[in-house]
Image 1 (cartoon, rainbow, N blue to C red):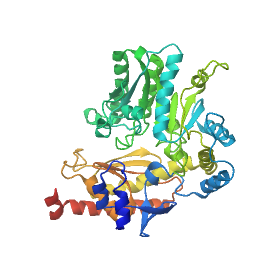
Image 2: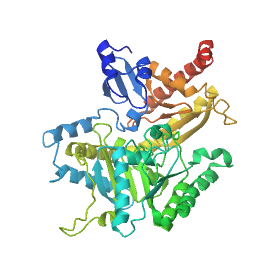
Image 3: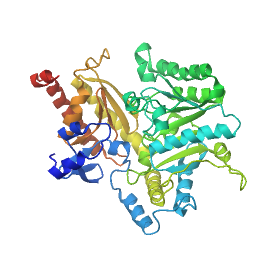
Image 4: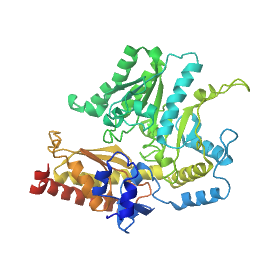
Length: 457
């Protein structure tokens, strides 16, 4: 699309996420409206949203039930002063959240987004050990290639290289191990890879001294690692390690929560319950900024004390537990539960994989991975040997531009792309998405091998 002179000036006066203004202006996108799986730019051109607004709009854009819940709540209250009270609808949301949570994760702290949820979990964990007589336990172990958010604590736990090195020195107390996907070519099977990768956490904990380690923080399925999908055994080993060393297991389910993986939470998909769960994105289907921390009952009870004792979780945000957001969260949960959209995601996910498998005929697909309606497709110059495209000819860099040109919204990295349609998608819409992906990949391969493209690279 073409920007008006005013739009171009305004773009140059803001800061875009993880891209330069100059790059954005080469292929700009300014959205005017959205509905279901469709977006429209300010010129009226339609785009097919194949990632639910970057894993957010699980019910699609502007879902009627969500919009109605917002309208009703706007007539009642849109803000309650958090230092003085809490809204009735926020209490109902906390109850609703606990009813769908895995295990006994019944204590909740609603916040304003995924990064805040992770930050809340880190602070909660450190304070828990301080007031339970183990103040030395403050370190967290996470993985390289993982992403947990943009705030300083969440960024410290992330292993995303240049996304965080520009802000160094980082906060102390964050340690990393290699993720399974970085080790897969060293082992004969994915099971063996995941088994070894899980045990790396215990090596770090033992050598750091368990008395100093507070938590393990992982995404059940990692977006920035290319939709890395470990085995269930991987998480069972982490659970055993945490129990053995009195370390809290924290799941970052900002992307995987609310039906995305075929269950309400990926903890249920993999059959392992963490001590703390961080939620965001799909919690509001993108209607309002929202996130939440869920904690085990006994952990939550450790923050309760008699009046005047000042025993409390010393953490808060102005918009945490916002009543408008709470009303939206209730509507999202009710819609998923009543329509069994988590089970629908499992069924539709298998259909999606079946369609994606046909892309192998293009000769550039190494692997298709993920769960439910969260899938990743990895490129390779030689799929059989697992040899990636060289640095000067990354297929993903071309696909990212081509997809936008063809009216398709995808999450694209140089070596892979993710597809995550809303839980309300139909098989016909899945067909349309994959047909568009195939078209874009074909055009990208042609462009890669064209004389003009070779001269540019």
